[in-house]
Structure formats: structure tokens, C-alpha cells
Length: 228
Image (cartoon, rainbow, N blue to C red):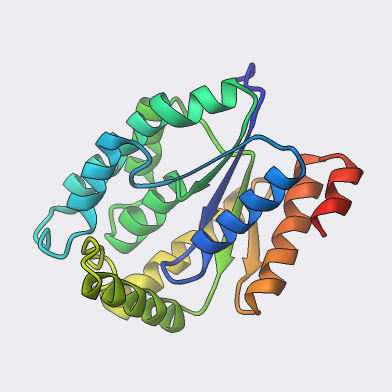
């Protein structure tokens, strides 16, 4: 990956923490400054990945074995890298991705109790070990985040959107393990993972993200001024 010209930024955190909204706000600001941006998400991001997403997140897939769940996540991710992420980076674009392998380590490794080793080994084999240049971990209260995610998905179901409530149906103990796993990743890789307190207002969180991204990626001061 030494020849990669673009920048790879991922957003992580519990469902309901606001990461998807903040990613799109960042994408908009970067585009305003002339930065070429590809914004995407996991699981999904491609036609194949979106089909896998439907299977993974649908509450009707309740009996899925944790190992099968992990394998499906990486099947989607491998296709996502090949079809979207790597070509965009090679073209010099800034890629903003809603979730990446850290989510698998937190949700399947921590939440499902599979541990970090199988996740990291699959990442090495199937993803070539590629890591983001910057990961913004939006740290939030477990109970509040899950409640927001459940309300959001309930509203989506009532409006005939896809059912994506399978993970939100898990208990608080599951999400506490996920939260703990995220913090352990950040502790292990502080040079990459920036833990951001997402308990403030959306505008406060957005301003903090802008500051983090421009400092980390050393974007031109003139561009940073236009973002504020």
C-alpha cells in the first residue's frame, strides 16, 4: 500500500452514536474545499455487499452462527475494497468509510466473544492488512446510543424500508462488550484511532471532527479556514 495516494478515514462507534450523519457532514465540507471524496459504508458499499448487508442486519436472520456472521462481514469487505476503496485511493481520493475492520473486532470479536485474533487474521488474509490513515471512534453512552438506533430502525421499518434491527435487538451486556472492545483497539493503536466524545451537540461534534481531520491529514491551512 506504499503507493497509495489517497487518504482513508473511517468512522466507528455504536449504532446510534451519530457517525453516519457526521461522516456525511465531513464529506460535504471536504468537497466544498475542493477535496475529491468517496463516502461509503460497511457492510455494503457494493451491489454484492448490500445483499450481504440485508442478510446480516435483518432480524429474521436471528440464528446466524457468529463465525458465519464474521465470514459474511469479510466477504462484503473484500468486495468493497476491490471494487470501491482501493480504486478510489489509487485515484488520489479521500475515502470516508462508515465502519471497517474495527467494527468486526468490536462486534464479532468483542460482542460475539470470538476474540481479536480470528478477526485480525481474516483481515490480513482477505484485506491485505490495509489500515485507515485515521479512525474517528465516536464514544457515546451505551444505553442512549442503542435507544436512538432502535428508534431510528423502528421508524425505517414503519416507512417500508429494510429491516436492519438485528444487532439492536441484542441486550445491553452485548453492547457493553462492544464498547469495551472499541476502547481496547484505541488503546492499542493510539496513533491511528482518535477517541472523540460524541455526547455533545451535533455541531460541537462536527467542529471537533473537522479539527481532527485537518490536523491529522495536514491539509492546507487555506482549506481548513474555509471549513470553519
